[in-house]
Image 1 (tube, rainbow, N blue to C red):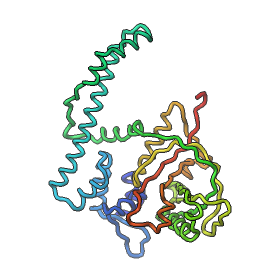
Image 2 (tube, helix red, strand yellow; image 1 turned 90 degrees about the horizontal axis):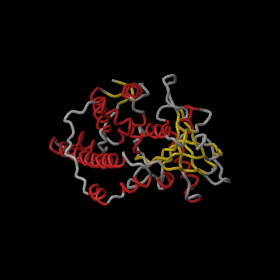
Image 3 (cartoon, helix red, strand yellow; image 1 turned 120 degrees about the vertical axis):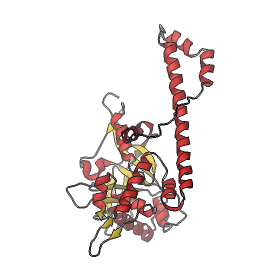
Image 4 (cartoon, rainbow, N blue to C red; image 1 turned 90 degrees about the vertical axis):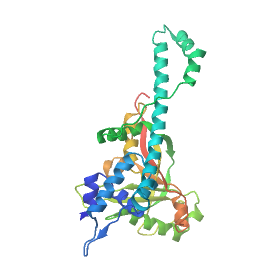
Length: 328
């Protein structure tokens, strides 16, 4: 049997993702008598390895759940074949774009100046040829080397649709917990506050933010999570909550479906490689995710409704603090 911390470190997956996979019925854990932490047997560790590989291949969680739980071999093949067809379509589209760009490069490589370059690019015959460009018959390799998969995963930051978000100064009710399952504990405290204070009725535009505090580390047995709920300035915050004032700031924002927290790495890469922007982390550094925030959309409404089963799909904005690079 392997503990949740050991699995998290061995497979480089957060404990939050492990809990989420459990909630979706993809894996199960157990608790040993007189032992505080969840453990996984060999079968569930192997299922988790399969899940992580399929996620890197961008197979949706619903499809993974069907493959691992309630479908026969024929249905599993059909699900994966659908994904193969989607990828082949992406390859054909990208090949067409590459061929069009190559055509433009060849056409203007000898252009003497701007006027000639514009004339060559605007040639009706060339534009018609691009519009009618055929799609390549390239096919995928039957066996994809895992190093290539990992490389593709690392390049996902290039495809992010990043927004720029200015958060205003806000008064917040803060709930903090350090220990096992800190997101759950901090979230439970915040949920009770929403219901007991009738926050949604007093402030229907209330927002929920969360962040690791402190971050997971090999040097400590537990990490923490802090939840912020925006509140009216005059609202009281009883213990264990605390009233705080957030100064606001500028953020690079990227929306994810709940559970896809690995995309934090993509957003960080986007900021690192941006020619115009750079990270603007807090002085606490890694102790609070360098000032990064996770805004759980529609969370206050859902807590006010006592978490309806037919609630809205879980969506989260990942918010990375940024500032303009010098000279930009």
